[in-house]
Length: 162
Image (cartoon, rainbow, N blue to C red; front, side, top):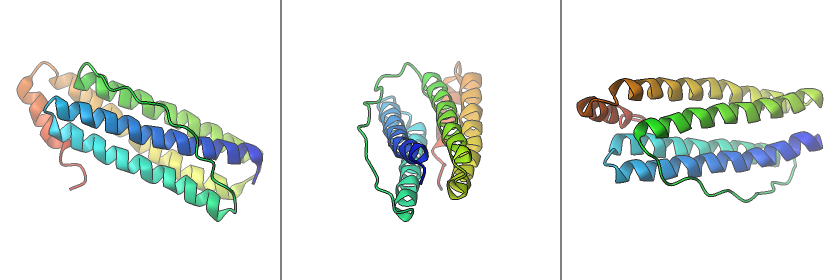
């Protein structure tokens, strides 16, 4: 495996695990704000990010490579509102898309077709992730001045994974 692709994938495992940590921190905040639906949605998202990390982990091992787990930064723990949370979710997903696109470029340059195939899956997943985040952010913005609307949205968010 090309060293640049290998290094970038090991780095991406860290980013995916950070994403899980990031969403778990947001989930804890939502719980403390009595938004159990948002907390459940964010916890589900944290689990999904762990699965994404493990997909890279397993891929590297399947290719006969060594996984190098890197230190994960501490996520933020304070948020000002549900709008703030989902604005950060959307921004974060855009950043992840950019990171994955950069790895894809490295795989293209290295003519590493198996890695390109794996990364294609991730990039299509990111289209969905960004759409979900932007949709929820737009809904939060629409109901942010209505307590009843906010709690109805929270209830809907809690249905994820049912």
